[in-house]
Structures are given as structure tokens and as C-alpha cells.
Image 1 (cartoon, rainbow, N blue to C red):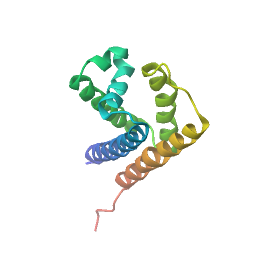
Image 2 (image 1 turned 90 degrees about the vertical axis):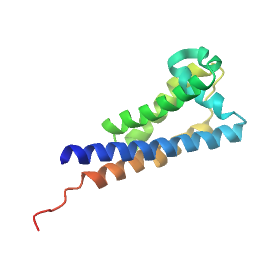
Image 3 (image 1 turned 120 degrees about the vertical axis):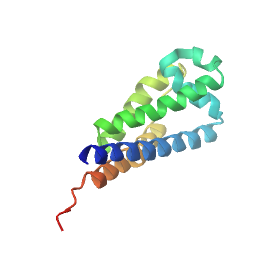
Length: 140
């Protein structure tokens, strides 16, 4: 029973966080004129390098799969604000500079992205994990 509760918390948090995070990415890509295909291939570029931009729909799918894999793995180990900060640090200080050599940090972007990662990834994860971790009294 406890294993099922933990699995349910991980799956629920992973799906919610994955959808919220990719939604924020889509909105930012749209604002910056970046095609969804290129954005998802950029995620795959963290694994494949610049070759991912030549892979068509296969690397688009790989980018989306990597995105959700990270969401599930991360929510399995970390929770709350620290999760949001951790995901932000990996994405904005490792993945993006690797995938896009011209990527530059700007204070306005940093504040926005940190807030997005705390509010749309870290806090929902903490709430979901807390919700499914609560012990219920089944003796009555």
C-alpha cells in the first residue's frame, strides 16, 4: 500500500510538473519566436549536441521524453523550492549554454525563470508529495 502511494505521488507530481514546465517553455519560446520543434530539439541537444537539430521529429520526441524523464526523476528525489532552484540551475547554467552557444544570461530572464521554476515546478511538487504522503487513519 505504501509503495503504491509513493508511486502515485511520483507519477502525479511528475506529470503536473512536466506539463507546467513545458507549458512555461512553450510560452517563452512563442514570445521569442522560437518554433516548438527547435525548442524541443534544444532539450535533446543537452544529450546529443547540435546534431539534434538535424534529427527531425525523432529528436523532437526525444526532447519531450527527456523533459518528462527529468521531471519524474527529479520529483523522485527532491521537493519544494529547492527542486525549483535545482532544475533552474541545471537548465540555465548547463543545458541551455551547451545547446545554444550564443545563450546569454540577463537579469530580467534569470528572475523570471527562477520564479517560474519555483512556482510551477518546486511548489506543486511539494504539495503533491505532501498530499500523497499523508497517513490516513483506516482503523475506523
